[in-house]
Length: 296
Image (cartoon, rainbow, N blue to C red; front, side, top):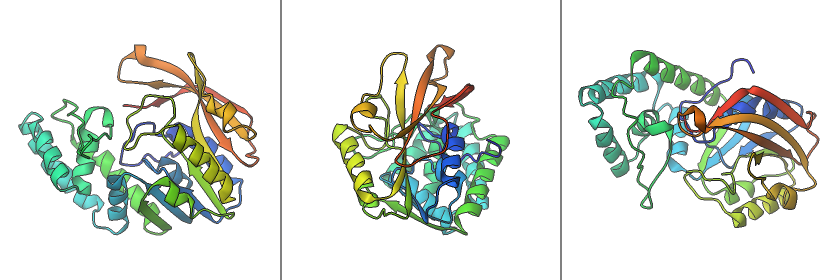
């Protein structure tokens, strides 16, 4: 897909490699409003760019960040100055300043510190302890915020502001159950919940009870929906596709993902895109050249 927009906040399991298929589905479907109960990085919705949308997530830091961009509380120039200043301190202190900012953020969460931590932490993870404190260690690169890297982030900020400031977008921090209560027959709901049965570190955990609740609420909403989940890998299958999401349209796409930086951790996986309407795509989309970097 040409001109794929990557948002400024990195998230585990980002769906950039599924954007072409989901974008195609959305462009060939009539709907009035786009709804994402599991916003995450927002990469899918921001590339589709609907005129009207609800972006929701249970992670308050993600929602605060995009709300601050929407209201211009933070801007490209503010981000540039902040990262330049903190980046210089980070390099001078050989990375020790990272932990000062992490402590500051945990005491008084704010969007600039959240962006800094997200782009300077180990593998770009978003992880919190039981008390809600951000606990990912430093990436061990004191020169992390070189000018070229700052420019890349600032350009991502510019791109996202151009999208969200002139659209009817709502950014809401709330559980998926609340978001889905607003969905109706004229909406297109895209769900990317944590993958059940797989080890991941998300803001919230995910279990069978929530998977069933999601299925039931989507079915009862009357809305068209697109669900992304894992189908299978070399070792096992996602049994919920056959037992819970049965009778729906399923598109599969093969790619590779990395857990960490080692080439030996490169593993194939078959992703599933599930819809409750005819999507107009072949049942299997193969592109072995593409890779999904979950923790890069």
